[in-house]
Image 1 (spheres, rainbow, N blue to C red):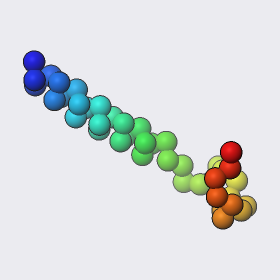
Image 2: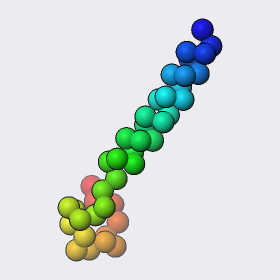
Image 3: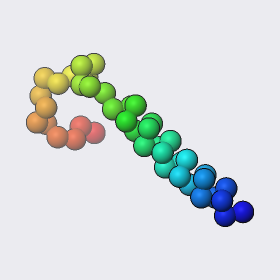
Length: 41
Protein backbone atom coordinates (compact mmCIF):
# COMPACT_ATOMS: atom_id res chain seq x y z
CA UNK A 1 0.00 0.00 0.00
CA UNK A 2 2.90 2.35 0.68
CA UNK A 3 4.56 1.98 -2.73
CA UNK A 4 1.55 3.21 -4.69
CA UNK A 5 1.06 6.15 -2.33
CA UNK A 6 4.71 7.13 -2.81
CA UNK A 7 4.40 6.72 -6.57
CA UNK A 8 1.24 8.82 -6.62
CA UNK A 9 2.88 11.54 -4.55
CA UNK A 10 6.03 11.72 -6.68
CA UNK A 11 3.99 11.54 -9.88
CA UNK A 12 1.71 14.32 -8.69
CA UNK A 13 4.66 16.51 -7.79
CA UNK A 14 6.38 15.96 -11.13
CA UNK A 15 3.12 16.43 -13.02
CA UNK A 16 2.40 19.69 -11.22
CA UNK A 17 5.92 20.96 -11.84
CA UNK A 18 5.71 20.04 -15.54
CA UNK A 19 2.36 21.83 -15.79
CA UNK A 20 3.83 24.93 -14.14
CA UNK A 21 6.79 24.99 -16.52
CA UNK A 22 4.58 24.37 -19.56
CA UNK A 23 2.20 27.22 -18.64
CA UNK A 24 5.00 29.74 -18.15
CA UNK A 25 4.90 32.02 -21.15
CA UNK A 26 7.89 33.61 -22.79
CA UNK A 27 6.19 37.01 -22.48
CA UNK A 28 5.63 37.49 -26.20
CA UNK A 29 1.84 37.18 -26.08
CA UNK A 30 1.21 39.36 -23.03
CA UNK A 31 1.14 43.12 -22.73
CA UNK A 32 4.61 44.12 -21.53
CA UNK A 33 4.24 47.86 -22.09
CA UNK A 34 4.50 48.64 -18.35
CA UNK A 35 6.35 45.82 -16.56
CA UNK A 36 6.78 47.75 -13.29
CA UNK A 37 3.11 48.20 -12.44
CA UNK A 38 2.96 45.28 -9.98
CA UNK A 39 -0.09 43.11 -9.40
CA UNK A 40 -3.15 44.02 -11.40
CA UNK A 41 -6.41 42.95 -9.77
